[in-house]
Length: 148
Image (cartoon, rainbow, N blue to C red; front, side, top):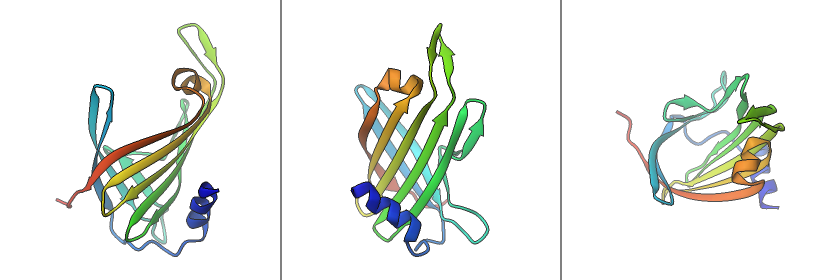
């Protein structure tokens, strides 16, 4: 039910409160591995849909390895919400055949605290075989960066 709320926000929300890009420096940790990355959200304009970049890589991509699309971005004074869909064709790796797969990702950043929460739903494909099928929840910490 809470995902329905996010979907309605994406579809019916008023135009973005922010006219400029939002830049965050985020850190994710898993076991003994820590990674720092830059997360940039560019609000939609009259001529272009909203864009999201991770370390300069546009998250809207399509090639022979699959397609990934930013489906929605909502920016309020307190929250940044991002919805991403990714689809992957069947593939063979180390002699094992994997079917097509998909990942639906919802990211919420609490702007005052910098807390990033990510929910990923994995269905099929090599990711399902390696990470497990189903919904995964992640929490990371971000800091709003100032523009150079």
